[in-house]
Image 1 (cartoon, rainbow, N blue to C red):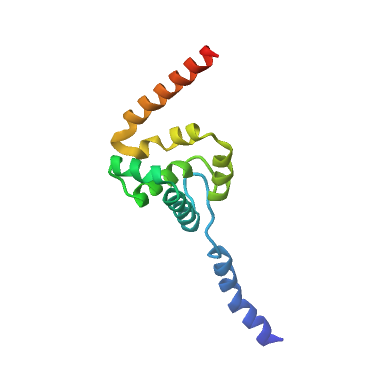
Image 2 (cartoon, rainbow, N blue to C red; image 1 turned 30 degrees about the vertical axis):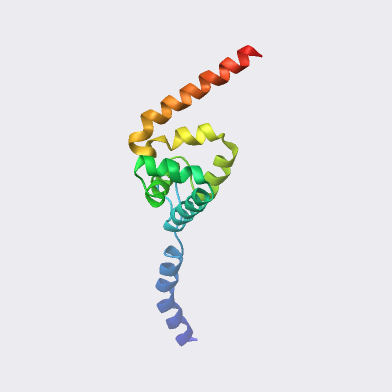
Length: 130
């Protein structure tokens, strides 16, 4: 019995250490490395499936990895975790998502804003004609 008590006293600090270091958690503005890795890898795989994204990235001078990292950092500021962000982004329109990550396009930011404004104007003109 005495040995069991002694062993318990020795194991108690290790138990607390294991519990406290047990896993990373994500918070708004500070995601775990696994959440950030999942976000960037998902974004890169989506960009690889879209031929237009390669054209846009080549014009902006960014690599897929650089762009994905920037975009995930923008999203990290708004959501508690990658899974929460993924669910929220699925509910957004392409324009809303584009505006969220617009600064990741670098020098193309002004050009993209102009293009979106022109698209909005042409859409409203089409609606007026109907």
